[in-house]
Image (cartoon, rainbow, N blue to C red; front, side, top):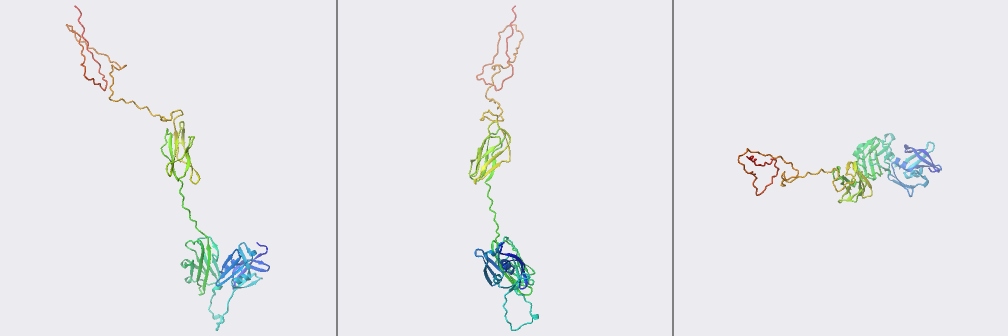
Length: 416
């Protein structure tokens, strides 16, 4: 607050009707300074302000004026100007009643002489549109931050507005069918969002007595919808292990599918080394994992630490766990690891002949059976029958279990 100004509450009337019952005005050196913007909104006038030159422009109907505000008369963004200068800018007569602290404004009227004067009792009741106290929402020249602002115009002092005569034009478009009339007030809310920028409103029609009503103003809507950016694809689309891990597995691969330019490495619980991520195709990468001997790590986890193309570091842990069990230390890693395979049975070809039992060392010999024929009176030499030699000895594929029978000669008779 500037010390040179003191503030008080004043009532402002127009043609005897109160338009601002409690206006916050300033007093300096015995002169009353009233807020220009508040009075302009109450009178339905367009008020503009140029900050660098501190110039206020006022347009009310066909009346246009401008005035310069002193620098010390701008308090908290509101410009205060001397009462008489403001009244002249609005084209009004002004009177001040100190006892009641009332500022009385009157329209400037031009009296036209008429040849015939009708008695006042016989004059028809007419209403001058200029005597209305018009309240606008949004205020003329104001800024709103709402895509669906409530637009209203109230003609205080007029009879009820005839809705059949109402016309409401918003930005050159007739929206009368969407407007509502309540007494002396016109209400409208746009059904579609207003675009950012300046919007003009025109209201005209007649009240119940037939008197015309009209008002035109503009306001600025600074609300703008922010379009959501399109979703950016996640740079990593998939990560997986290429094979089933079972006890004895000592090597597997981890694949990553994603955007080009990804680097990083893969780690496994129980394995004390890291495995770099190598480029496999344009959009995929592979890490060759080798598990040494002596690892017994149930429920091992596989994790990848990746550096994305934009430099962001991302860590991913696969949800599944694996059981890593390899051969004990000291075993040749080139040999099959745990579990060790069973020895394969030796199969003998059927074309290999089996040796005869008598020719095989250690083969079981069967007992020989001899036959003793009846004694013959005449001794005969012992005759041993042997099988005739065969031209080609065909080996038997299976050994024979029949005993070998040999014939022996009969005993000679005793000498007589």
